[in-house]
Image (cartoon, one colour):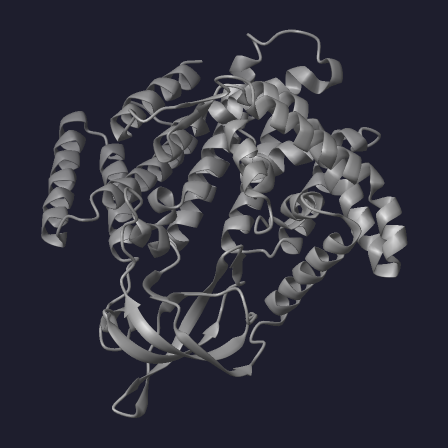
Length: 484
């Protein structure tokens, strides 16, 4: 079996990712059992390499083993110097707010980077993150140093939702609900993030001044990824219509947005269009906070954008696999524990590889970009949909139609929304005037979303799928893509 250098590199990356995936799925096994599996894999590869006289099998096996080992080494050592060691007891902890506060309608969640805990009236230095839940007021800000008194515990399962694994992707293994909190001081430890979060807060404030609800919260969701003020009924309409992605920062969402924005750049040649679009993505990522999830989405968006305009799919495949490799090397937990990463990655793969094949079947004139919208939507959802179904149990039958009629208005709402925000800095009246095209777009999108959501059987429950379906589905799709 002969592999080219590029194929060998690609499959080595895939086997590494497979190793991380296997270790993630069997994370509850004892390390002794995993070591037995590693030895078995290595021996099997050794035998194949000897029989076939091909070293490549050994390289693939080593890639798989390295992936497994990387996941196993991603967990912290829980000892007396780590906050999770002290779970299930009352503590006095000192630490700083080290992520953007997660403000919700019913309260606020703060990620605290631990500094010290009180033991026998003395403070002992420790490390590790804690997620604390508090009432919405008083307000807390990034960089605040706090003293927290309360009951600390391990995150528990919420019905079928494994909350501990969800938080593990952020390296959080302790939570504390409604503790007593005292602000010690405010120390802006990171100039970049402090100012980005301040800019986001200013943006939300200005949008609230020039737009009424639900339009201000919807615009904030589009511009800066903030979903905290969006009405529950509107959120439910988005879910039923299969449009939740438009108020979430994902690689798919960013790619779709940039594809439509690029229509405004038709006066440029292809290379300049790509360059300008990438600059827009980078500015957008910085503007919404440049969190790890947003940066990942931005990278996936850029890859998806370049892939749509590229004819060298083999190079894009290696780029995608290498990007996933770098991300999982940094944080291997995202591969299984981070649904956002899964959806961004799979949607981008769909845009790159499924889109050209579906394009052969969806062959009609591209009036008003209907064909392109349908093609991009179906291509992205062909790979992302199984993950959505298994995790959320709902299938939006109206999603292709809703995406076709709603998505084209997003660039207008974002562009004129941003212009309106800039105008509001000079004058609220000017901001309201400049915001009018965005407001019209927002009203149309909300109206169309609601119409789609109230269609009978727009969404159906799908509760019978499990991971076995994924094992069957993705290899079949992979074979369909690969055979040409």
